[in-house]
Amino acid sequence: MELRQLRYFVTVAEELNFGRAAERLHIAGPSLSQQIKALERDLKVSLFDRDRRSVTLTAGGAALLPHARALVVQADELRRRAAGLLTSEPVRIGYVNWCPTDWAEQAAGVAQLRVDTWVMPSHTQAARVADGNLDLAICWVQTTDLASLSLNAHLIGVDRLYALSVGSDTSPVEASDTLVLLDADEATWSSWNRYAERFAADTGARIVRVDDGGVTGQAFFEHVRRLRRPVLNNPKGQDTQEPSGLVRRSVIHPTPLWTWSLVWRQGEDSPAVRALIGEFTRETPELGADDEEAWLPATDPHRPTGFRTEADRRPSPTTRRPAPRRAERVKSRGAEEVSPPRDPGSAPRSSR
Image (tube, rainbow, N blue to C red):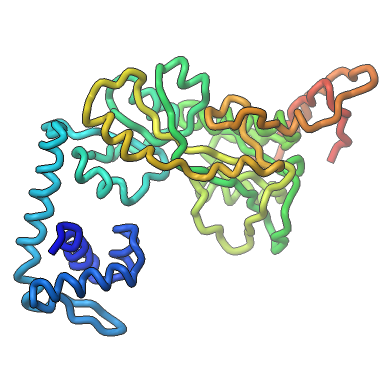
């Protein structure tokens, strides 16, 4: 009998579903089933009744479950003591929109982890780490943020943003043909506004200024219906199901990427925090920026060396540079559309 088998037993008993338990444990379903059968052979007790529709604990499994759970807890505590990491203060982590569901389990044998219940904007969470109100945070940051707040960052996730459009056309849309919403509430949307302004400047996408929090949620859907143009989605709504009458469209030439970073204070001296950083940063996800058509802001900390922006890909002018156009403003039922001034080195665009 092995400790990991007891951990598997406890997880299956909590889920009463081998598929979900395998996902939590990050192992293949058949392997989990084999380990449970091996544990049953060692204990000479049937732990679960299984059929095609359900999994239930046997009387023997129910009787042994509290003892198995206690052994797993004691083993985790022993590991923390052996590493000199036992602390009465848990490591505090905050997030914006997304936190890996398995991190609490990953942390179990290393340190106590408390996921902060205040879901706040990226710039706020980064500042809370710098101020010491959080130990770690998952948020969007730029190199300027890391420098000003004395933070380190490690890439842990990437969202490939898309556009939402009215109708049934799901074909890809050029970045220059999209709209991007900026909200007047800087306290909430500062990070998104910075990203969106840079995206518009680099690609020629047009800015629409709103003041109703409509960069996500139902208000966002209403703006898409009203504007009747493809609108770049905000990562906070990345996995939100679009309502009837609206469709997702891939954005190309270039494709915008939004990065999620784990951030922590430079010079962090807490053994527990450092141990969790090591646990959570053992792997780096695929950025997807190797694609010639991918786009990241110039100040993204995970932007590969030599990575080119859309502006970099434009041919160098061989004639005298024209003066930049003045921004165009178009009223649209409460929203104001602004076409950003063009790069002086690019050819003037015809109005749409």
